[in-house]
Length: 334
Image (cartoon, rainbow, N blue to C red; front, side, top):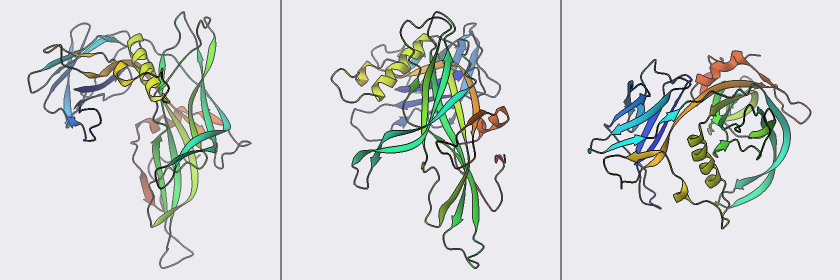
């Protein structure tokens, strides 16, 4: 079985995902584990039950929220009589990252052609960096997930009945940037109170972010905002994500880590020989929104500001929101 779970001290609900694994090389979709009993216990043995929202995905109840300094353990009882348990996970105090830096750069990116071939070509865009303070004797252990919130206008390709007055669709959506695991990797023997610059993500200038349609084309981009999800990790979660980062960054060299070296914190207590994959994480969370300057974004026209009044973007679903002629609710006007 494979387990993916997360609770934080940030807004819920939190999810626990359960799926049955398949043999290596099997292209079939993982089967969800249905009708399981899923619960999280804290250090005082207070139990919170997660309810199955859809097959294999279990959500925490309304009002449940992790507490900094508290330890949590995940328990799973499946319908086939097996029992699983995670190691205890403590939510440690969060590290604050209030500002980001941006730079207009050219990077080599893989480009896939229509026949599946891949070549590397120079791509211009914006790189984002976080300056992270090293507060104590232990280096900062964090992971980041970055999204871009894009507002754009689509125009009907064949306006009818008036070509001079085409239909215009105002849209916005969120897109997760990259598919790698982004964890901090501080310098060895970093002195206390030092800081280091951590690369977060890259946005190509010509990034194609909207869902295409043969009836519409992109007229212009209106605004872009950056949504930063930051998690402060305990030692065990950091080891897991650091190993996952190394695997996903492997380039086929002889000393690259292999998948079997990735060890999670779940075990089957009813059958110790049964293999369990995955990780249950309990981390401090902070979500922040930053607004980029209006389009066009160029090397000589680039700035980024923290905008707490745009933190509502954190809760907007990733799917597209479009309205004909009007602006969707949640539109950034300034």
